[in-house]
Image (cartoon, rainbow, N blue to C red):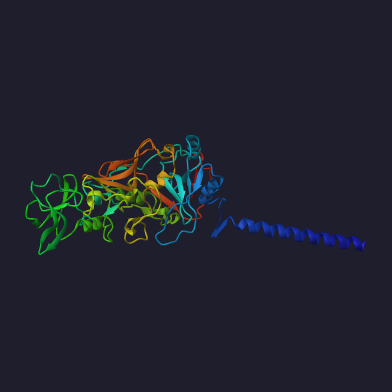
Length: 420
């Protein structure tokens, strides 16, 4: 009898220990999904959106790992690989259209790529209907800038006090001297290394036969010229307009439009967004400065910018073009901007780029004759250039902070990932 009693006591203690262990393990797992702050609130398990794109790239059918030059943060060094959607053919592009949809902040977005700090870059894609994103869209239309007749107007911001504008399409007076260079003293320009012919090496003129004047003309394209004063050279004018520390003083028309939209819709979600760089690369093309180069620039060529016809990398050349909340030389009010030409090019398929509307990109194209042109995507998903004072669709771009998880959805148009 005593042996039976001891057996049951031992069995009871064993079962009790087993139950206690189960309870301890269960609460340990449950605590990973609890947020204790006054009341206990359940948080559904999720996967970081970064991991979604990484997994797709590892399979290799619909996404790739980026191997070019990049630097997405003004204050941090790259620590992560970049992954991006890639439509190798129309069939794959159709599949991607049902994989990259996100609802965030009450709007539909598309995942374009990850950042090298671990974030995920999204582009605006309309408003959800019954929890679905069966749509494409812009927030409206806007000019990029109020005027078009200066190279400065390709800027997401610019300095109105330093811009020079095209003055006229008019040849110099017959017999006028042209100079390869200029000197300046006592308020007077004097042409140097003169010729009676306007050519690739002689762009300056006083529009007279003496070669002296208080305001000098600079011919940059056939008969188009601009006027310069106060002792400035054309190189100094270009620097002031495109790359000087003081370049970014005034918001472009499109920046003001995007900022107003953000202020009305997304300020309560700012903590979800990383401070990434939005690149407005105004550096001149390595191939051409053409008529804007007084030392051998063709008088029949345009001022071309880095992304005139290049998609080689995601990096941004000058600090004054790296628009970021943390960059005092190109300071954003909010962490929002536009996609660049190299970014949209990564998609590799017009079906992934098109929305049914034309929309601006953030990449300058060129200054031709007296027209500043910016890159854009047309309604069919093809690229083009457009004069900056004309209206075009606006698709804001944001970047989710590293580690942001989705709480539901599969990424399809009818069941988008939900970030809340």
